[in-house]
Image (tube, rainbow, N blue to C red; front, side):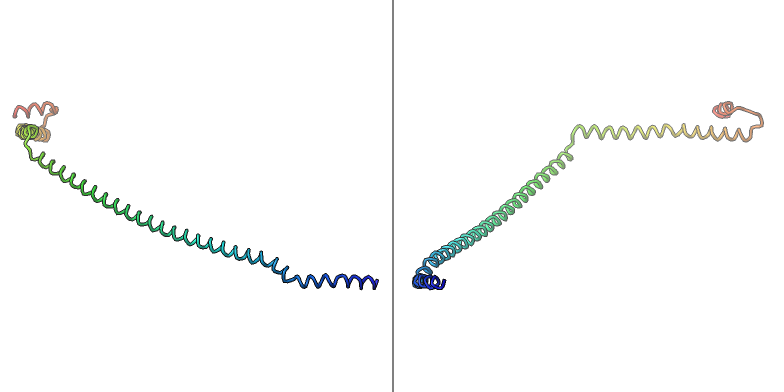
Length: 169
């Protein structure tokens, strides 16, 4: 067993020595792809960062353009609203002027209406004047009937009293 150990040790020593000697090459073989991966990864990340910054700048520029367009559109809308408001006020003023001119015109309709108002007023006044004597007569008859009722000793009916007062007795 000891022999085997010694044989194994003798066989393994040259292998270990070769591995030690080739270690810098093995190190290069493993580290070179890692270094290349890191370099490519860094470059890729820089590209991505650069693109993101450019996209962010483009988004900001686009947002500013949109904001400027929106402001301009609002200004144009306000201007259009003001113009339409002014035009509407002008039309309203012109309508008012036309209405006043129409009111000032003497038309047959206005003459007829005025005449009818006048005739109606005269009819009302003449009707009231006609009713005054009738009202006085009715008042006299009512007072007479009341007086006859209070002073009458005999039993007359109301219709008899009204007839008597209507004759003027």
